[in-house]
Amino acid sequence: MPQPIDSASSLNELLRNRPDKARVLGTVNGWTSAGELVRKAEGLRKGSFALMRGRIVSLLIGEPEQLFVNLLGLDGLAAGILLSDARVEPSVLRDFEHTAAATLRVDSDTVTATEAPENAVDERSATRWIIPTSGTTGAPKLVAHTWASLTRTMKAPTTASAGLRWGLLYDPSRFAGLQVLLQAMIGESEVIVPVDYRDLASAIPLFASMGCNALSATPSLWRKLAIAGLLDRLELRVATLGGESADQRILDVLKRRFPRATIRHIYASTECGVGFSVADGMAGFPVSLFEKPLGGLRLRVRDDGTLLIKLDRMEQRFISGGHLPQDSAGWVDTGDVVERRGDRYYFLGRATGAINVGGQKVHPSVVEQVILAVPGVQAVRVFGKTNPIVGALVAAEIVAEANHDTVAVKDQVIAACRRLLKRHEVPAFVQFSDRIALSATGKIHR
Image (cartoon, rainbow, N blue to C red; front, side):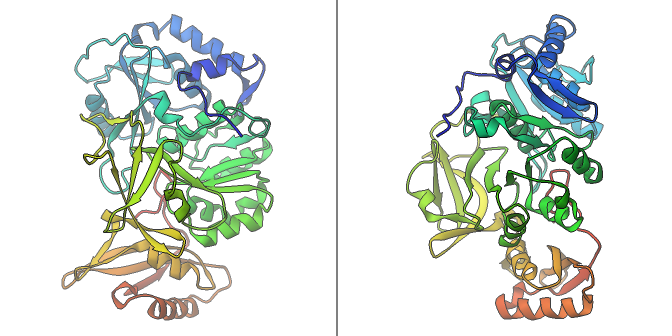
């Protein structure tokens, strides 16, 4: 069984311990070795990064190789690294930098001062990684992680992990993208990073040409790949799902396409880190996970159905001050609502994401599961449509499979919803479109 990694390790140590010529990073320009990345990072540490010791630095994520070099150059040198996409709105970036007290900004290989007030120099070498939340249910917040909290569930390398070649389809400035990068480094795997992770038409052919055999994406993004026929370009040994609850239909699609692959859905959040994972091919998670702590994590469900988690050691914190919201016993409210059916729990959705129909809550994912089971439906987005009488009504946007009559599909969708859902959960509006818009984090826009 793989052993947990040493929490005292760092990204620098991991790459310095790899063979000099070991391939690490694949891009459109080919492969870059561990030795090449380390030497370039060392040049920065002795040059323009020298003044960053003990400071909080704002790092804009841009060209893939420069991203790795910059992370290596700052790791263990800066007191904190604020990660942001290079395409972030300037006003949002300024707010992030001010909140994090970042005084220097690194954009590619250019270093400039920020508009944030000067912060005190902190000589500690344990760098904090400052990551924006996804903002799914509100404005993004900044969470500061330690190396230990980022890698709590990651394992030391094995023969199997050393043969993996990960493709990156997540924003590397967010928790999920960082997890893919760090897991590849810790597992002594290789990682392929496209110029733009959102450009699937370019990213997937790059993955295929460079032998990608491990991929992580949200269920919505996996569904988008399936609809576009892009899954046929890949031969995967590992497929992981995260960011949203994994429905049975997409799990079955992946199992049929990659019958010999390990398919795992992961429950994680920027605030709490990785919670647990399930690899039995079924949606939801078994009740047995409540029976014993999982790597220092315990689970509980509150009377209102909200999932609570408790870590033996919670090192991450909100940058705005204080620690993550915990009760007096240390339980953290995840904001996710679950329901027990037999010996399994299923995710209903975010507590703040429910549609209020005349005072009655409707969880979009519950309606989506019913609609996805209707023949001819490829993808669906359920959301609330404002109504002056009851506050909101349920609406559904559907992508139909090719050669299916949308009128017939709509009739079957309404019939299935009326049969399986409560009256206030049945969509009052059904429309069809060519695609479902996803956020930058690969999740459905509500």
